[in-house]
Amino acid sequence: MAQRITDELRAWIIQQAQAGCTPESVLQAMLKAGWQETVALTAMEEVMEAHVASLRAPVGTRPGERQGGVSHPEAGSNSRGTSPDTSRQVSHHGRSAGTPARPYIDLSGSPRAIDLGDRIVTVLVSMRQPRLVVLGNLLSEEECEALMRAAEPRLKRSRTVQTATGGEELNADRTSDGMFFRRGESPLIQRIEARLSRLVHWPVENGEGLQVLRYRPGAEYRPHYDYFDPRAPGTARITERGGQRVATLVMYLNEPERGGGTTFPDVGLEVMPQRGHAVFFAYDRPDPATRTLHGGAPVLEGEKWVATKWLREREFTP
Image (cartoon, rainbow, N blue to C red; front, side, top):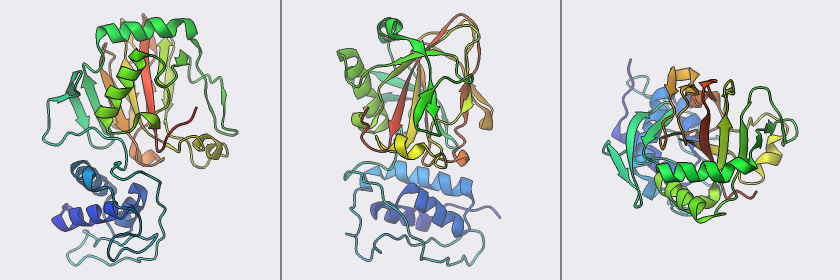
């Protein structure tokens, strides 16, 4: 029997968000109550995007709120519903009042374009699972050229996180050259970072430095997740500097002649590079269920240049 997102469920999700419960705890409560994961995620995304202004209540200040706990919704899998165990303890991430639960692009009203003040960005593709948006016109041609020029003298062989220790290592799965700009290091970087912050409703300081990557013919990045594996021994060290990654923005600075698309194998999607365009995807928890497995397909002809912005839970300290 198909499950329907009811007004009661929407109200319950808002109540949990106002109480400071994490998206992970809300999702787990819904799954335990019998909701299908796809229905639960869709309901959470719809409600949180429409009511982010309500996500501001400090823990323990709401009437009837149980300190450190979460109540449970009725299951939608049968006509009577079920009343699951309410003893599950949840954690709360330290977020300032008014900060949404995770980065998001406001698509309420199904806009064809988003006015960011200094630039009008077009919405080309939107998916709910994974939460993914393909954008046009995010960067100007001049900005793309300037990023490439500024980055080129600083390029070195790209490294990946060493999950056992929290350090870095060369990895055969990633064969690009790359570099990081310091956050706010130039007027160009400041302007782009401020625009991205407005786009995804996330503080500039919660982002890692903007990374520029060059892929020459044959270079690729095999499918991977951007979040840090919570089971890996090095993750605790990595997340000390800003928590988990929660979203990614990949911006295309040029167009290779052939190949080089950004692939999402779990959903059969490939985004082809086009200068100034971008793909945004968010992952509310470090879990394959977010369907954010992605990769950079091999460049077959020409070069591919991209700029990547990774967003963290909290302020990131390099």
